[in-house]
Image 1 (cartoon, helix red, strand yellow):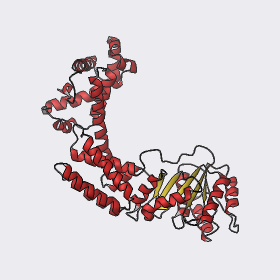
Image 2 (cartoon, rainbow, N blue to C red):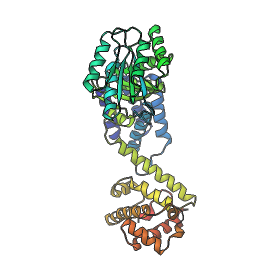
Image 3 (tube, rainbow, N blue to C red):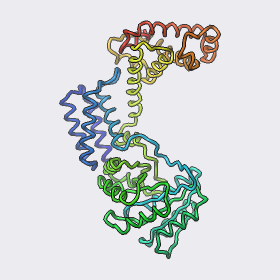
Image 4 (cartoon, helix red, strand yellow):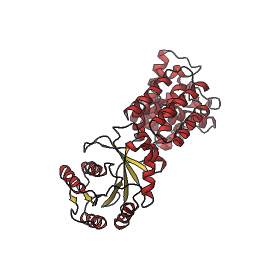
Length: 428
């Protein structure tokens, strides 16, 4: 993953050093982006769709006010990379019933047995009672390996050293741990062309009816991860995926993208051999790590805040303007960061340092006032009387005069709402 991160970091540095984002620049960056993704073993069709979507958005979507075109380009790459990795969504392990039976499957050598123990420790730390079941009758060392790991992390283990009936071991193991919160069933490693073994894992699935089937995949297989997933999917559903050895290869991005293509959800990633090195997969954090930037979430929040501000302005132009909409606008602007950095980016807005400082104070004060109002008051400002204003002022830690000044500013904006478009005149 280090090599992938270094390649993307160079690309981001190049974008940040670009003064103008014109068509020639976009084409050059697109080619470099494609080379970076292909080196990471991302499937060709995903590389093409990724770059096409990114270029289309940059061409069609105008950067919001206050966002430089190069920052908007980075934002688009970041958002498209998150989509490539499977998108946002709940990934943490939250069993809905007891016992929650999780069945681990994967090819030989993927690190499945170690991952079973890692997952057990992860859950035990979160106060779940976990039982480990070993059903691998093909690899002689599997029984001893998982038994020793179970003892090391302090969770109960079930296995039958001398039995050759994997299906019955699974059934008896689940029954043995029926009072646990979670039962993790490890199975023998399969290869996608071993039909007999794949059929066996399907039989185990039908016999114990697990709540979740987890496919364990080695990150070094890159784009071939999709073929592994599809082979198992012929015999049983794959609900979630754990990708191991993400620390040792640049092809992890390819494995993640390939799995996302199958619509399975990557829930965890393994970042080393140690029993503690398992973490919930977060596409946003992973994308930021790959791009070599820790501030991408902050950039994304700024862009989204500006887009929210533009939506609010569109609502204002329709004439439907109340204190609730005013509050949305204030909240959106507050997310942009210090106004001293925001105002210089807005065309035709020139304010002195004193005006900017006053505007910043007003934002803080007005947010407190608006947060002290009831929804009825926000929706129907006409109900505000002296008594309500005193209550609001007390709740916000301001004076009734401050509340009245904010209401005056609100009325002024309401009057000029038909002509207010991309300007923030109420800060003057």
